[in-house]
Image 1 (cartoon, rainbow, N blue to C red):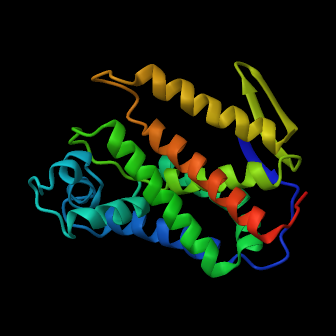
Image 2 (cartoon, helix red, strand yellow):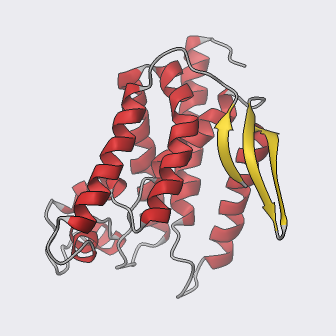
Image 3 (cartoon, rainbow, N blue to C red):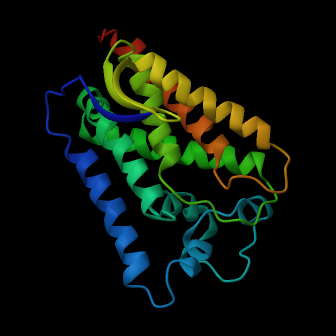
Length: 228
C-alpha cells in the first residue's frame, strides 16, 4: 500500500514540515554529490552506531560530532533515493495535520523527540551493533502514530498493489496506519537476533510510532480537545 493523499486539509501553512522536507533533500544531495568520496564515509561519521553510545567510544573513522549528537545528525541522512522519497512522501501527507494541531514550534520539538526516542529504542535492541543507522523514518513513524490517534477516520487515497492487481482505493487512517505498524512489528520480531536481515531498523519505527502516539495522547488529554 502506497499512500498518495489524505482527505484531511490543514488550516495553516505547514512551514516546519516543508522545512524538514527541504532539509532532508538538501542533505541527501550534499552527501551524495558534493562530498569527496561519496556518502559512505559520512554514514560512519554522522550516522548513529549503537556500539559507540553503549560503550562510550568513538570507533574509526572518527565522528565529525560527539557520539551523542549522532542521534540527531543520523535523522537527516538517507541511504538512497527510494529511502529518501518514501520517507518524504509519508512526511508530506501526514505531517501537515500534526503541525496544524501542535503549532510550528511544538511540531518541530515533537518531530525531534520522536526521532530521538526511535533511535534510542533501536540502539537498545541492537546494543552491540557497529552498523550505522540513518534516516528520518523513526521521527516520521511518530507522526504516523499521532495521526492515527487524532484522525482515525480520515480517508487516505492509497495505491493498492497485490501481485498483478493494481487499484486506487480510499482507506481509513486507522486501518492503513494500523496495518503499517503491524508489518513493522512482525518484521522486527521475525528478524530479531538474526545476524543478517533486511537492513531496516524496524524497532526504530516501532519506538517512534509508540512515542508519537503516547505524546499526542498526553497533549490531547491536557488540552481537552477533540478531533475528527
